[in-house]
Image 1 (cartoon, one colour):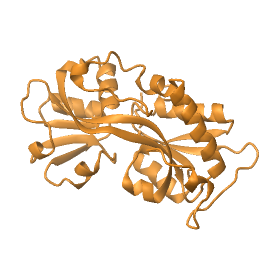
Image 2: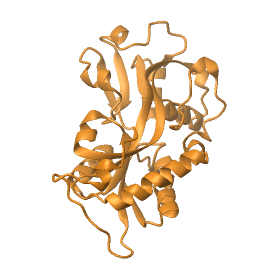
Image 3: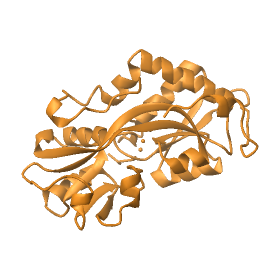
Image 4: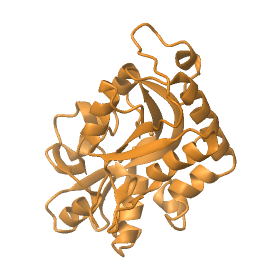
Length: 265
């Protein structure tokens, strides 16, 4: 399988219905599809061996289309390219971890999920799992992913970018890094896919309930579509569909392993 990757604070509809002068409002012609630039991060989004796009973000994009009646064209992109296309207006929407820079450069439409960002180390180690205590030690993370302001600003840990968390788990098990910083969803899904037990690692919450947000481009904004998508997300949250999409396959939750990610209320 070619691994392709993703990831997500609700805001009012005021900026959607009253676009500022800096925003370029567009309209769709009949049958024209909304472009979704979906981040290339497994397990959020990927292409399987037969070329089918899969993953929670792909499913959300397709369900938004089905519920709203708005045609959608999902495009899998490397994470940095997905962000660049949103900024340039090549893409109308994406779903990413909420961060201050994107909040300035794009329109935060709605919260899609809330995910704990965890630090993880081998279970047989004993050093504290905080950035302050990991100074001078190697910490792996998905390249280009926003994992909180503290990690963005930190210059004391040795950051090791990887393309997939399975690479990080391998490096950790070989003793080549000291910790992994990743979403709980990604860690759990990776361990499950590799046939590994979550108990092989120990965890601490680095960022509780990091928001995964639906963002709309300011350059190619579609306020009417954003209103429909926000309503569709509310429906999916209320009927439990978001919970099923993102967390239904993770497995049994364990109170000793901190709260698993959960959808917004």
